[in-house]
Image (cartoon, rainbow, N blue to C red; front, side):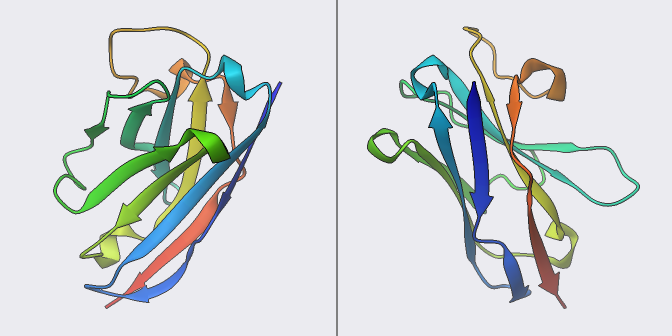
Length: 126
């Protein structure tokens, strides 16, 4: 089993920056790739970003491209999402997800992930 814990959410003004973290524990050697999703209450969960644990595979949703950067620290079993130039529409609960499954494709759908964290709230004020 793999356990994911997000942290680093909070309240920030529009135009500001925030970094959220996802730390994994358990059988982390099984993880192939990690993604960030976000969800606003009453709406579908939205893909934000993806990275492969072995390197490469960085990919971003259109709404965050150029503003967000995903990175990893395998020694710490952690993945980070640096969020710059934040907008009020970035307000959401941000979830970390991981999969054991090998794929040449970038996983942008929830069903492609085996493990999920509990989420961290990011609120951007105007």
